[in-house]
Image 1 (cartoon, rainbow, N blue to C red):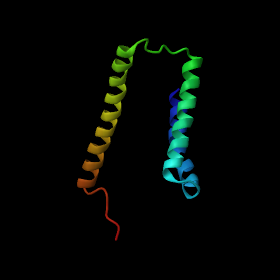
Image 2: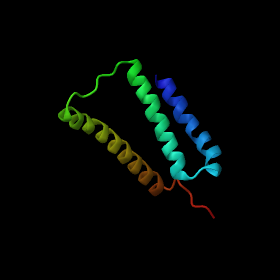
Image 3: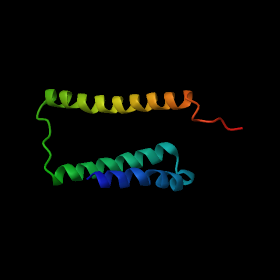
Image 4: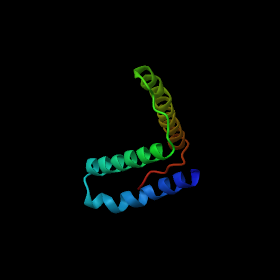
Length: 93
């Protein structure tokens, strides 16, 4: 499964590079997200993933996803700040 993730992640730049001149940004994002929703729904159906049964279940399942996303964004901000202040990023002349 991790190999599939790396393959999808690594090809993202190539797809964006070739699609950017032909599609508006928001249109491209909507198409990408709809594709991800379709793939994830298919995987959830194939693996018979359990869904929350009530509102409380949906509320509590929201927290781990939000925390992981915020953590990922926070790490990205810290890394980008440390790289740019350490002199590793050279300005263009």
